[in-house]
Image 1: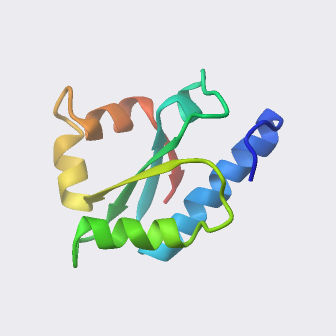
Image 2: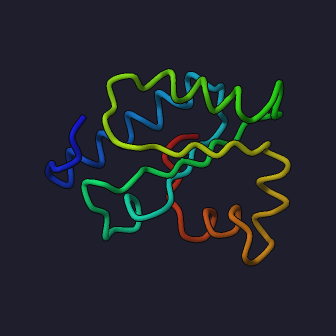
Length: 111
């Protein structure tokens, strides 16, 4: 899925990616952050996603892999960060934490 497309198509593609990741991981929420969300991205930019799940079990890497496996046709780099719902909401109030940055400057894409 090339990202040298019109803004509306790009937004639809990002929403589709978030939905597919959510379905594959059982996420309650998926947040986007970074240059693909904030602007200033290039064709080489990655899409940063923070995936909020009820519990991080069996482990974050396994959950992230499920998300990556749901996107075999996506041809841009994607970073998936997995947080439990509890950890995300606790750290969302801690200035300087990733959860705080995502909650205050990111965009909720799913949930």
